[in-house]
Image (cartoon, rainbow, N blue to C red; front, side):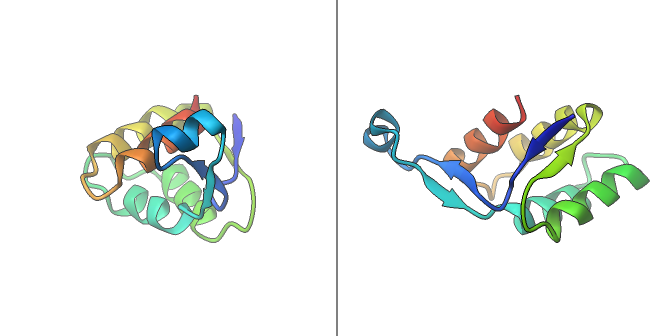
Length: 95
């Protein structure tokens, strides 16, 4: 299980920012939860939907069960509406 704060995900928008360690805190909780809940690529599962709901309404860190990490990575990777920098930050936070 990993504890992740999707409301303050650290994202780099350029090579210079990454080299300098200057990240931006981005709240990705609601968009991520919506992608999780409404993605057709993951079978419906009560625990999955509860996790999506917990992430959506979170105000801080959320405990992400290890068994859902590969599925979150899958939906994030497959979604064409998420910028690459955001995908990278989500995936890094889950590893």
